[in-house]
Amino acid sequence: MSDSWTSDQYPNDRLDMHALADGELAGEALLAAQRKKDESRELRAEYESVIALKGALQKVEPQTSPQAWQKCRDRLGEFEKRSAVEGFVGRFSWALCTIFFALILGAGLFNRAFDAGGIRTGDAARMLSGLAPVSQPAESAPVEMSAWIRPPQGSEIRVTGYAVGRQNGHPVRLLHFEDARGRFSVLAIRGVNRVEGVEPMLEHRAYSAGRLNGTNCITWSDEADALFLVGERPYEELARLADQMREE
Amino acid sequence: MLFGRRNRREAFEKLAEQVFPSVYGTALRLTRSREDAEDLAQEATVRAYDAFDRFDGTNFKAWMLRIVTNLYINRYRQKQRGPQWASLEDESVLEPEGEESSIPDRKIFDELVGAEVEEALKNVPDDFRTAVILSDIEGMSYQEIADATEVPIGTVRSRLARGRALLRKQLESFAKREGYLKE
Figure 1: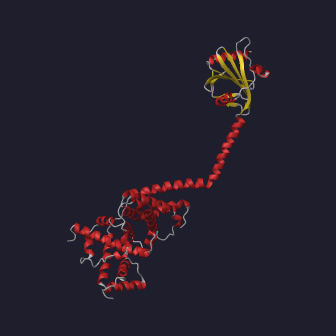
Figure 2: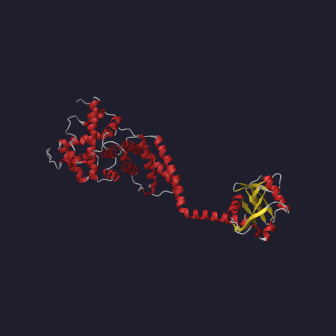
Figure 3: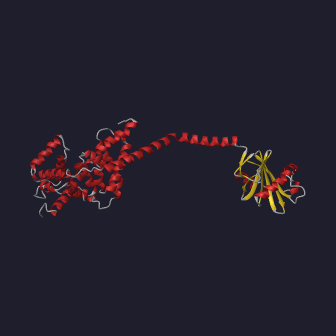
């Protein structure tokens, strides 16, 4: 083959010199490329140029970085932990959901079964404000309600209204009173013997004090009922009032 | 290749540590930024570990470099700055290397040190630089480069030839500037 090349074969022959230098040729192609290189000064120069350049590129320093490798290991650790968690959650998601649901349901049932005798002041407050008054004259309050709690005889206390109902499974009765000092109410919740969210009164051991709907209240238990005396007056006064009403 | 769950990480780390200089070096030469290179190497390592069960067990280094290159092309290169000389890929613009200069390349390149070659390599556009790095520094075959860059072998051949021509010019200019070569 001569040194004069046609334009269409020149690039391929040059590329063959690169392939030859890269060790990418075999068999007939290898022999042909070697023959071309031997016969053409230009192709030989091309080949030698590639070899020299490859030699120069071998001078670059290997990039070693223990810190970079350590960061990769740390990332691998994070990835493995995340995969483990995701894998577990993904595989057992239904089981986990079922367990959590069962736990919530179980806790609710347990609470209902074994804590039926207790009530929180928040629940009592909702009962107090949630009971609609009966649209009857106060004097028409059922006899049993009058008997249930009665103003002391000769006092100026009078019944101004009443309400009955059932909340959270408990029969609830509510009487509104009025005296010279203002209004007050008595809430009785049947089947409750323990009230949470109130503190025992030091001077009046029979009562506990707290607040319902932002108003002072005292509470005590009376046979099957938990009673709340609620009014805008000091605890001491509420306790004295309750004493009078209970004595009757 | 299948490994026991307990030994999987250990087996992977053993192989990955051996080829890490190549992984990190390639990442550094591709991104030209230490920060990006660390990030790329980490992400490639995690991806490789995730896909370790699918590694065919033949050439771990080529497999890792394929992941690095692929990740770089698909994610990192988009945020790299600088002109992309896509038109230079046209084989018609290839210029003969050997006959341009009467000075043998060996004379030019013998004087150069690795850092100077690295510096010159940075100025070669992405696609050509990638081919040169994978072939001449990491010793990958044309087929492996084609797999890593997802282009036909013919394109790898032309990118390599063009990349080398551009690098040679860079090195020649550098040699003249530094006085290794007279104008």
